[in-house]
Length: 331
Ligand code: NAP
Image (cartoon, rainbow, N blue to C red; front, side, top):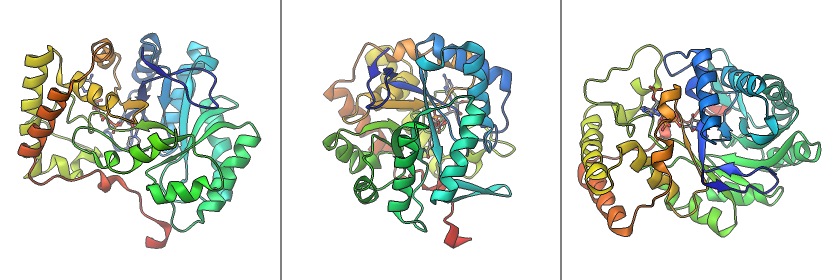
């Protein structure tokens, strides 16, 4: 396994991180907890020891499943747990709340659900314009001083927000979206993180399954599956993205003898400034490609071909903005 050393976290972290959003069930058409636990164990068996979760994933359920899996397996000290803070539940909705009061309440709930007394990496999930960045940063700094968290991170923050936050508390890690179809971070967050030695955990390596090789024009999303409202999965864009997917799949096979999924995860890992790629399997067998992702790199020619395929196929690109939770002022 390729590894990275995150400042403040004693155990080296795998560069492939297990994303557990879908294990929360909510917005992903439900989840089978026993299957999720087996998936977490399969990841640990593959030396994937960085696990990313959040209270927002299934309103705490993902954290509970992660806590159960680690407790049943043992070896908490060999696992790097990343979780998040700053989304308050109101009914079935989440809205941004990074006040000190909210953070101090949430951290203890996360520790309880995760069955641990420390969190390795603690991310503010989304910026909260209704709360002063200083207040949020100071609260995380205090949690670190208290030993409840080991490293401070921010997710979905702009560079300007990171700069302001960093005046109060040094940012150890950032979590922006990044995959072959969602590349804004290449322009801003990743260069800033490189310059400032900030570890990055980029999310959505498979673009919510679009780059997994398992989705085609006949795939239907049912129940509460968020892909029903994801603009990439709606006409006319869906066909454009699938056109790119078909060509990328062909290229991965012809050029490297690899699957589309391996190409997609390798592409993320090979981007300058990326420390960890988060990928969200929820069945043990979905981790089989881990070995195929490791031990090779994309060369400049391949990166050029990939850029060309995406640019010529997707005429009307769209980012992951649809996922952004509402601000409190908007409610
Ligand atoms: P992802 O990894 O890009 O895609 C997940 C999808 O990929 C699921 O639908 C899953 O299929 C499919 N998949 C995974 N492995 C597969 C395999 N081997 N074969 C076929 N399909 C496979 O998605 P993501 O969940 O959006 O992002 C990954 C993680 O990043 C999340 O779990 C979360 O931890 C983190 N994240 C963070 C934020 C943030 O705001 N900070 C936002 C989004 C995500 P099935 O449907 O069959 O399970």
